[in-house]
Length: 454
Ligand SMILES: Nc1ncnc2c1ncn2[C@@H]1O[C@H](COP(=O)(O)OP(=O)(O)OP(=O)(O)O)[C@@H](O)[C@H]1O
Ligand SMILES: [Mg+2]
Image (cartoon, rainbow, N blue to C red; front, side, top):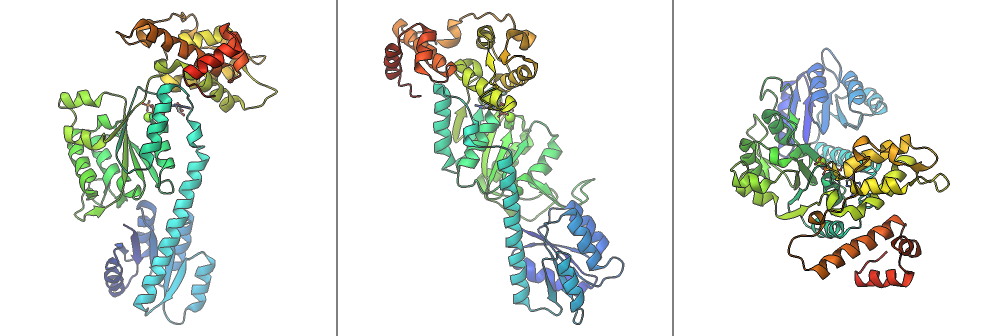
């Protein structure tokens, strides 16, 4: 719902304008003088200001100038009395969106307001889009060719076309947030907002007002109306990070919003309707919380219409070489002449390490090594202490589930080795074959067998 602030010292005008515009479905806030108006402009999420020109104290013109300083894009429409057209011209020079003459024609006023709001929405969307692009988000930013990641990509492809709720689970640092962005930017809502909130980082009261917004005076410190993330995400996507941390009382409220797509701001009585796609993530086992009675079962099913489970890095070690190259390019650049390589011992250490912090930890390790290395080679000494001396011990339990017949298990291992060798050698088949000690035709045969396409 779009919110308009009307400023006039004449009460009659306020009443008439409020009635006229709220009938059009806008939310109206009013102020009797420019000073109060300015406070509202600074604190509340407004979509437009309509102000009278002549007022005791601060004038409309001064208010316009101050508005443009705090929120340059917020449209301001000036109301001028007959005979003050020069002032209107000056206001336009100071970037007022438009002016209307008192007494005004209702239809003309409605049209001007509608146009200004449309224009403002475009400006905001453009801004969001450029911010999203400068965030360097591309689907291509997600790296990984392991079987499990290919399955994740397939799921992202499928769910991005629908509006279904998706619950993304997986250990810390596995890329859950990256996946949520991929779903948003792949789908039809990509030009609308992607808003996220960390449910584990705020107190219950704060979380509630962040999610649903609050009215002015709803609680001590609520000096102005504030829209919640659900309202900000209207038409787009809301990402509830660490959703498992949400306190029970808010779980009930969230369930209602998901079912009805409507809610009230804290301290408010008016029902607000939104159209929001909800994605959520958790690195704890919510299913267990449901069994323990910590998380509502009905909410769990609402959030978990589609489930994406992201494997730990340890479960997809064949992604390590690609990720390493990706992060070297990120922190060092893709300069062909000044390439950075890893010594065989350094590779070995990276494979042997269990990566409790997953991709995030690997990213940090590579960033550090790029800084510390010399001579274009990252050596074991450039890696953090906990990685040095990690034994390259092959742990069968980790890779092969119990009760798998031996031939199948050996094939599983063979496939992993072939994939890893190819990734490590930039997909140059002859190099990969050499590193495995087999001929090029044999590696091609294996690639066919395991359906490995490079
Ligand atoms: N597949 C990937 N390819 C490239 N970068 C990745 C990949 N997965 C994760 N990253 C990077 O690792 C870091 C952590 O990712 P992200 O924040 O998405 O993880 P998370 O699962 O949300 O973690 P947490 O549970 O701690 O919030 C980010 O810098 C992200 O860019
Ligand atoms: Mg995260």
